[in-house]
Image (cartoon, rainbow, N blue to C red; front, side, top):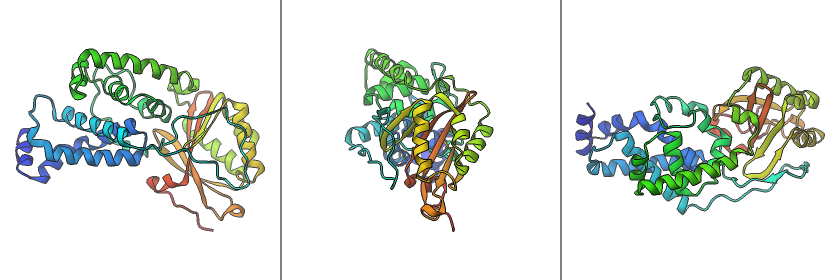
Length: 334
């Protein structure tokens, strides 16, 4: 069946080409997202990948599977995009009337964007290779994707192909036009750097155990909308981590994260706010909207919440521009 579709696609049959590539579209989109850290950039890279595959199908010699061939194109498309791109600059804090506390540190990855859960459906249907080290759900978490972005491009590609997708060393080397020894060396360096980044993650992120996610998310919404600081802070783990790309501020630890939210509460940004549920990167997420006295329900951004058995261990806040990707409005009706 596949051979027949390839033959038809080579003659210019677009329906045959679509039938060949559609089963791989979702997983390739996620692959591009892991490499680029941006949903929009990943969508552009996916389209470029499919265009290159359409134009280059005559050169597909069928020595590897079609899936492996598509991953080769997608990976190199992303590498070219990384090398050519000017990463988006960090953004200054811009919430009027709110002066945030001094951050624990300034983050390196300011271009990170969330990935809507509906686009993950079907992306993990193809089993990964036996050498994969990470669960597919873990490898799409915001913390993991952010950590990937600090790797040099070639190391980034090798680590994803080997440790996330489970391609063999020889396959990976061929995809990247490297020697096997070179690919193994790049993988060793990438693993070392990733381990250094992982050391900054909350313990709950490393454990990979969500706890009673729905209950914790519901309590978070109640506390946030009511402006109940005691209830909100009680949900946080001791090592809770707050980040807010493209603003580079990062806060690590219950005390400083609590101070950040108290600043919002003192400015009237919590009590009376509205949170609309969605999901991003396999986690509960909420579009949050200002109280009426602060903008008539104007969107303030997206909050992604990571839970563990001990409570909420991470929160990531994104700008309002990401909300349309989640089907959320820019403003709530008065």
